[in-house]
Length: 154
Image 1 (cartoon, helix red, strand yellow):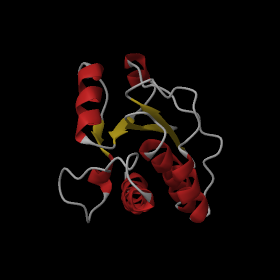
Image 2: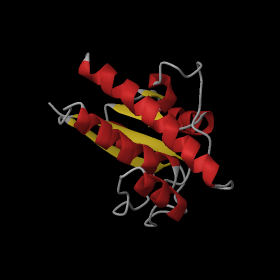
Image 3: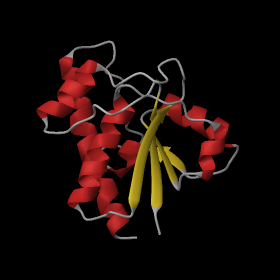
Image 4: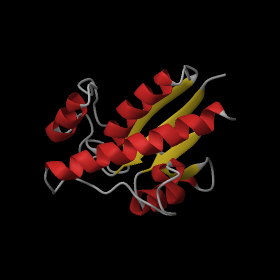
């Protein structure tokens, strides 16, 4: 049976697509082929746009390819498609919970990183420099590894 996960940030051009690419790679490394991963944004202003060039470059530097990504907006009816919806930060978590109307499992992505403090977020690197994208990559790798281990044990 396929398990479906959607990773969500604000515009779906930085954090959530980076997390999507990293999580897919991590799940493949763990042999978890029955898990599907998507990403989306709570806002739709970037819908159809490719991933931010800095996010693409950061992934490429890690040997990962995000070039096929196109931004999408998460909508209420998507809760029926996914078993788990993971937000990058508290603002998006609140927006998703409001949108869900109590349907679906929604949590913070970094809650799967055993080294992260409770309530840890993946900060938005959009208005900063390259170091912010490097930090996002580090954080999503740790959360992806924790999530893969969690899924392998269920």
